[in-house]
Image (cartoon, rainbow, N blue to C red; front, top):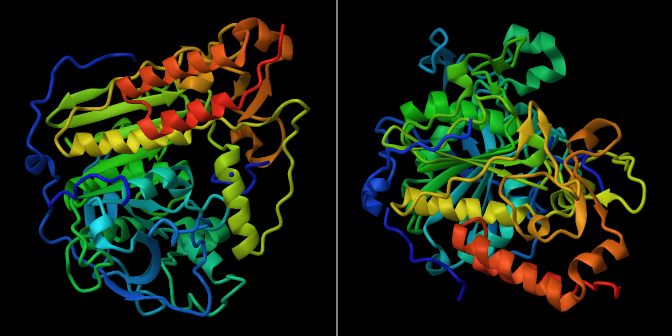
Length: 503
């Protein structure tokens, strides 16, 4: 049996990878698990859903052996019901809605990938919906890449959702099954978007109802529900990098209307947010539209060191009130793109998409792409978000990475000061940089430079002493909530393989 909770009732290179310290003193009375659920808004329509089948596995199918983990993967065509388009009312987050114009294809359709335990008894009642990242011109499941270890061992269900026409265009170039995705389309084809050409494919107008309708469907038990027969208790929405901009807009402007998600994990956001519809400036600009505010629904913003910003619209204070439940975790040493996720992205592209990728980041030995395991903090963030949304304790309020203006302050090793610090930063063997020299996405790709043998020997003496320090560091992180016990075991096991040179 998988280690699971009892079901609740209700990245070599990143070229293809996904491109005010204050503590609020007011505390939130801890509600019961039932009371903590986000109230479902009546009237959010549900889409029509039908299975997508073909002679091959889907575009973007999981690289992991799902069968060995007791999981299955299914793919569905999603047809929107009476889709709306939205516009902001002035500079606020209030929106007006109007019916979307008729689709050139007859209906607006997208697709979703669903990964879930084969046996409903192994399901923990939690669903993670990811807005798939299309920075590399195709769908990439960044959240799954980083967090699948946790999701699989804990019994979560996962939904990967194509929310951009860019992603659908890539599906039509699927090498292994060119006909599989015929008839899908999310493009309004407004005159401005058509004139904009390629960037017009990023018109977000229909993403909002797509995300809401899928959120309403999952766990409803209605016809087409991909989790019908599974006891769904909580549903969470996540977006990383480009899709973090979508997540900010969804949380601020759409969630107050739809109320179909129980919490949000926003990862690697910039100081921008996606506009509600197509315009020559695709980002929102007002303070209200950029500052994350979930209206009382838990929001955890996970930032890598690459993404740290001094903007008060991003580095806003944590909060624990009935109308604002927010946490910001900045992870020292981590990078927007790392080896773990980038290798997965490259493998997926090589299998499914006609895109040639070459290594172009200018690392000089012994410097390499970063292997800092930010995935473990992803695991803890999801776990703590779920506990919070289920009526448990809020995630810890984390120290911010130390900045002077926009410059990260560094310690004697050249590593960032402050922030969430797991063992590779607390007991370091390398200097971690949040960017790499080179073209394209190298500016978002981390690098690491190992300490010299002399420095390692002087600092730690023996492997046994090094392991002891890692044990202490990881134990503290488990107690605080930035690391899960299973991941502590993985970091300690890795530490035992390190050979500290003799002095």
